[in-house]
Length: 364
Ligand code: ATP
Figure 1 (spheres, rainbow, N blue to C red):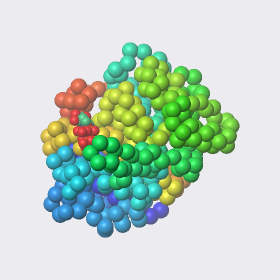
Figure 2: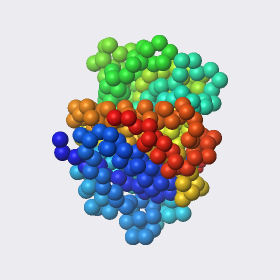
Figure 3: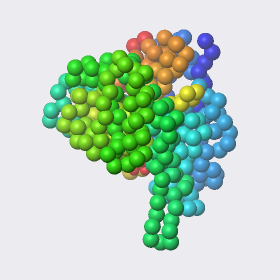
Figure 4: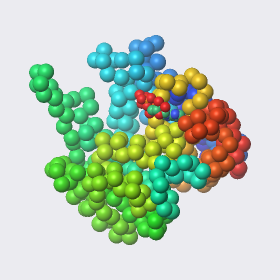
């Protein structure tokens, strides 16, 4: 097997620190699984690159992202670096990358690992659900558009298509098929989260959801309004398995999900298309703690684990799958031991300490 070509985009703020930590773990994984070959190539892109060189995402970097086997990104953007129209570079770069790579579905696991404090009093048999967010349409389709009427009225248009909705709903059912169901009772369940009682676009999203669900008769499905879901995720998260939703709803509920299971420092994500995929932590650049070696690297490390899982499935490669499982076991062991944690989890360890400890726990 030739090496997988992985593009690394460390980006800005805490991004370079969490990426270095993740490389440390990946280096260990490669030494433990000698048949797994990763060709890692790092590129500069993002806000600091724009400030220094006038470009957010250079053409050669985009070309490399398009031809790579996968892209691992840590965080993009700096609040004081702005484009000429006053906006931050992060949305432009991320929406541009998603559109160019056709990353139609964002997958965000919400999993409570033993040892991690949960803000909920009663979460029964645990929290282990997946949010699947439509990633190219919905409210974000208006990015770069929208309209103003004088200084009085502004509009953005939500876009829902049958093709886009079918794609993301199909991804949600495929994920449910591979999982063990919801923690409460093991039932495989895909839940459509929408606002079908108010918006025509959302009623259509639900209709397409129900159409696609017919192809997965072995998996149960239901529908919940987004306002009710923000309540239910807090009251009884154990009753959910896979949630699928429009872009902006996914953006919001995935932060709620992260808060339930230890915060942004633990929340990974995968953005997948038919041919390509990009992996990144759910957090941003956290400029207040950048440069201090205190950021939690686990969200980026778990994103790398999702990358290996995706490569394993795509190439039917057992080494990738085993390496991914080894990373997750090491992270879970570290969290359960509770001795080496960064300050966001109540510890005193540095970013590098955590990465080294996880690397030590990796067994081949
Ligand atoms: P951006 O504008 O890039 O989204 P932000 O600081 O507004 O940056 P996040 O980076 O998502 O938003 O983080 C919000 C807060 O959560 C941070 O200020 C930080 O306190 C905390 N946080 C986020 N990621 C981490 C991490 N990996 N480790 C520790 N704390 C984190």
